[in-house]
Amino acid sequence: MASIDSYLHIIGIELLLILAIVLPLIDRPAPKRVLSKLFLSVLGFMLAHFATHALPNKVASFIYSSHPAYHSIKSTGPKRT
Image (cartoon, rainbow, N blue to C red):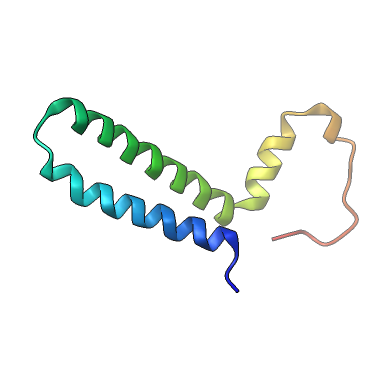
């Protein structure tokens, strides 16, 4: 059984493909602007999601480095990937 994350990847890719096909077919500027913003929003979300998959330790250390309360916590276990 596939995970919910896999389903979200598939839905996001399908949405990007549909928007990429529909955008050139629209002539009026207002709907085209709305769909362009939607396309860029979905693409940005997918890229951010990819970054969290590809660089989990780097993202976590960046987030926790800005919180002084977490500086004193030292992990004794192996590094997570």
